[in-house]
Image 1 (cartoon, rainbow, N blue to C red):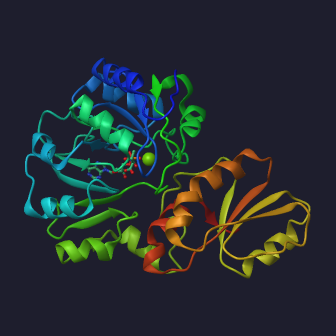
Image 2 (image 1 turned 90 degrees about the vertical axis):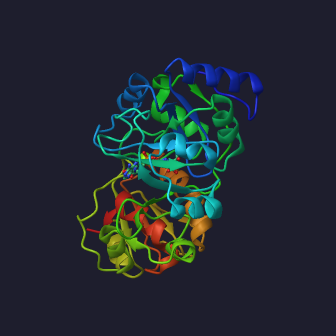
Length: 328
Ligand code: TXA
Ligand code: MG
């Protein structure tokens, strides 16, 4: 496995050759690092599932260099898709449309659809342009672990299971793309992200949001409803303001890390506070690195303060619902 300084042309050539050979190349995007393979090559795509330990029922996103390539892989590219691509590509939006047979069936996990995305990172775009084909790429982490936002995270997650890691520095957005399907009567957001629901409605008119995501806007969303995903190894709990005080009082003798939105003076010297950004975009950029750093310390628990149930925090709250359980 090699790593690279940004933008080395030789390494890009090597990356393209590896993709052509059916190998795995991790590359930066503006959201998180992706674990890429040729999306037309079933054997290569199966390597992605094996490297991640990912269930074969979870479909992969296909990355393309420009909207003009979409109709090579989509059986239908409706006007709504064109308008979304015009407004948000290159960028953190995945558009689910009917697929063409050239996309390996494993990519779509047996569905008749494919999620297409044109990422905004210059290194990703250059790789995609040179490869001139569709690159299937989930986040470059082991299944159910925190997505990587640096090349070093990818190496920690996947080691020799990846043939090359292209290093493009830390990711700018920090959480995975918004996923919207156009294969429902009303376009529907399947995963919230940096492209918000209101911005999508400005382009499309009516946009639905899956009920799982919607329940996130109410503070009392029933625990257990959301699969625990993206999680650190250390027990990770989310809390709202005052309830954390009594938890900390009970655990004064335990090493604990808090990711707090506010200044917070802990009573115990074993309780360490990390101050998180108060704006959703900055918070998202730092979230996964903060969870990883906390996970690497020898602590009993990671406590994360829940941001307010406001629409602008939807994507961050979605990731926290998956990473952290309610405070016991
Ligand atoms: O930002 C991102 O989207 C990153 C970077 C690498 O592009 N990729 C990413 O991939 O997050 P992954 O595999 O971790 O998440 C893919 C998501 C899953 O929630 C999957 O269910 C959904 O996209 N998805 C992919 N294809 C789909 C399809 N045909 N229908 C419905 N959902 C799909
Ligand atoms: Mg993922």
